[in-house]
Length: 331
Ligand SMILES: [Zn+2]
Image (cartoon, rainbow, N blue to C red; front, side, top):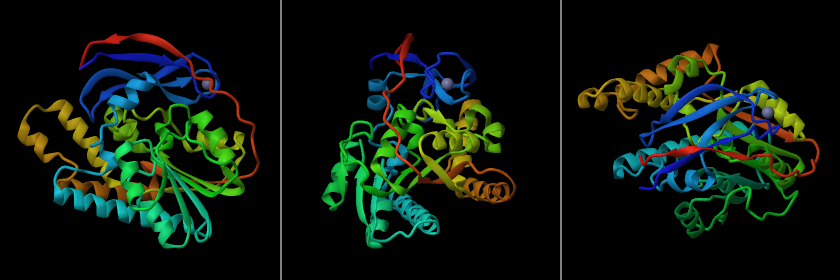
């Protein structure tokens, strides 16, 4: 396998190269032992993944077809259970958004629509649905099921301006190479008064501090931007949006995966590694209990943020630049 070249990027929000390191972690998901880094801009305090693979390497090497967010393909049973979980999640998101926006006879766009479960629910409730999905296999499969999908990234996709009533990004916004340029684009695609929904990890979650660099939602090198509630709200106001609600999400699997990463890093014993898996019912049961308890008093691991578009903003070019970090040996 070819060596992976790491790069150091500047802050996507203000362009400054000055940042302070928050954490360095390897890629626990694919066992890639490289020093991926999250930093905070010294100028505007934006939190971003400052040391990462270059664009081409990131999207060609770190998003295989069996990537966990594309649905499990371990065996037919796990695959079926996972599909049910994704359907339940789609319905839960639909019902939450419906409280803030009348979800019928609208034009809906989901960016990073993956298996399309949310779009299917929207369609069943009388909405016109569109998706943007860069993964070829997922995109082809959605097209076969009759969903209108653009097989591209948000940045590159050609879509008519001011044409959508609702745009959703579930666990996608933090993956975008340039979140600031993407916000210009999202603002331009949405009608004034339309709704933008972002589901992202909450950087203020107490679980981040408890699990430290084993926290699943650092998810380096795929997560490129990291948000606290206040920082996200400030950014969105700058891009013509007004916050309508920030809702805690119930995602117990996140803690089960963080625990698995911590155990795998400290124990070589195969039996122990086998016990501490996210699909072990006992581990998942414990994770559900702790998630229920902590969500009562603290921020959740993930948050569903609902914004209304107030006004158009003029698109500006991306500020992101790259500096060579070094070529690291094959992994
Ligand atoms: Zn900055």
